[in-house]
Length: 363
Ligand SMILES: Nc1ncnc2c1ncn2[C@@H]1O[C@H](COP(=O)(O)OP(=O)(O)OP(=O)(O)O)[C@@H](O)[C@H]1O
Image (tube, rainbow, N blue to C red; front, side):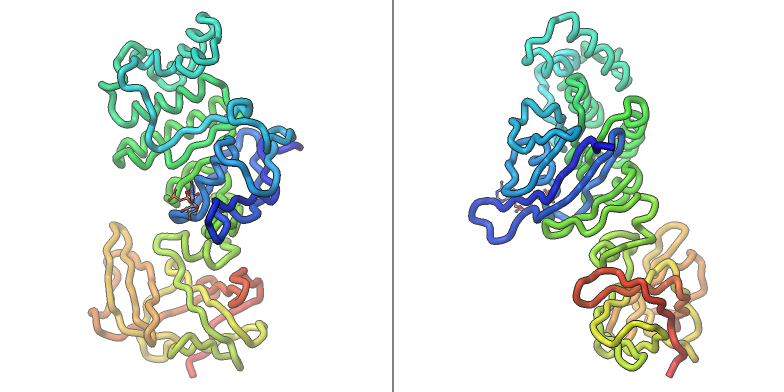
C-alpha cells in the first residue's frame, strides 16, 4: 500500500551551519495514522515539518504524498495543513470569519464556504460560538479555531507543531481528548511535533524519536517505552528514564568508573552502556547485595516515589510504591536487579544489544 506521506533520505543544512538540522531521515505515515515527532529542542522537528508543508526546501532527498513526488511543489499546492503553537487567529474577526478565511482567499463560492464552516464548527463543538469575536475567546478555543481554519481546507495531511504548549494544563488535557476524537471521526492523517513524551504517548499511534537531526527509532507508542532501540531513546523516555551507565565489560565484570558489577552474559568484552530500569529495580538490605549504595534523595510522586542511590559515584534511580520502608538519607541500601531491569547498548553505536544479560553474584 502507498503511504500517505513518505520522506526518503531527506536532509537539510541551513546556510552557514556546519551540521545538518535534519540528517537523511526516512519516514512513512499511513493514511489515518498519527505519528509524533518527539525530541528535545533543536533536534530538527520543526525543520522536518516545514519541509513537509513546503516552507523549507530539502537539500537532499524526496518527499511524497500519496506516492507523488512533491519535493519541488510550492506549499500552496500540497494540500498540507500546518498549525503552530501560536495560534495565528485573527482577533478582530468573528469565529465564522476566521474559519472561512482559508476558503475565502481561495475564492471559493460563498455557499460552499458556509457549508464547510458549519461542518467544521459542528465537528469542533463551536456551532453556537460562530458569531463570537475571536478576541473574546480563551486559549483552548483559539487553538480549536486555528485547527478548524486548517480543517475547512480539507488537508490531506495535518501537521501540528507543539499545538498545545501555550495552553494551561486542564485545557491541554481537554484538547488532547478533542484531537483524539477528531482523529477517529474524520480519519485524519497527522504528524504531531512535541517535546512532551506524555503528549506523544497519549496521542500518537507511532512515535519517531529524533536527536541531532536523526531519527533514532520509530516504534508503536505502546512499545517504545519497553523496547528502546537506541540509548538516546532510553535516556529520553520514561519517568524517570533509565539510568545509563557507559562503561567497559571485561572478564564478567562491568566497570563504570569506580562502580563494578558482576554480569553473566555472552556479550564480548568491550565498550558497553548498561541501562537500569528504575521501575524494575527493588530496594533491599545492603548485606550480600551485588549492587549497593548510599540513599541520596527521595522524591514523592503521588502513589510512587523516586529514590536516588549513589552507587560508587553513579546516581541510580529506583521507583518504589509510596510508603515503602526505606533507609534514611545518607544510609546504605542494596538493590535487587532482576533480569528485566537490565538493558545493554553497544558502547560505540549506542544501539540496543539483544544478548542475554543478568546480574552475577556479589564478589
Ligand atoms: N531558519 C533557520 N536558520 C538557521 N538555523 C535554523 C533555522 N531554523 C532552525 N535552525 C537550526 O536547526 C536546528 C534544528 O532546529 P528545529 O527548529 O528544526 O528543531 P526543533 O526540534 O523543532 O526545536 P524547537 O522545539 O526548539 O523548535 C537547530 O540547531 C536550529 O538552531
